[in-house]
Structures are given as structure tokens and as C-alpha cells.
Image 1: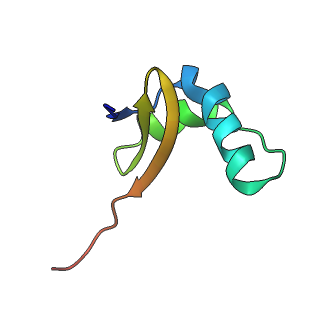
Image 2: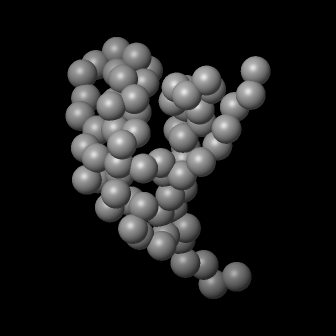
Length: 68
């Protein structure tokens, strides 16, 4: 089993939404424009894990300013 990790793109919205609905057991809305907005921000990143072309996981990272 090979899992690829890459930055999410707007076209991933339907698969991310389906995954989140399974995980939360609730309907939700993942907007392609919101994924694009996250991708355009230098401090935020949404990564997807793919197996056989299907999104099977996500990670959201926010880089925060720190004094150290």
C-alpha cells in the first residue's frame, strides 16, 4: 500500500468533504474556494493523503509566529 502526501487543491473538495462526513457522521460543506484560499496563504497548509487516487486523510498546519 502506497500513500502519497501532497498539498490539497480546490479539485479535492468533493473527496475531502466525503471523508469529513464519514469521520464526523454529519453533513458538511468543503468549498473549493476555501481550499484555494488556504493554499494561497503562506502560513496555512492543507495536505491530503492519497491511496490509489482516493483521499484517505488530511492534515491542516498553521505556522505561528514565535519569539524563539
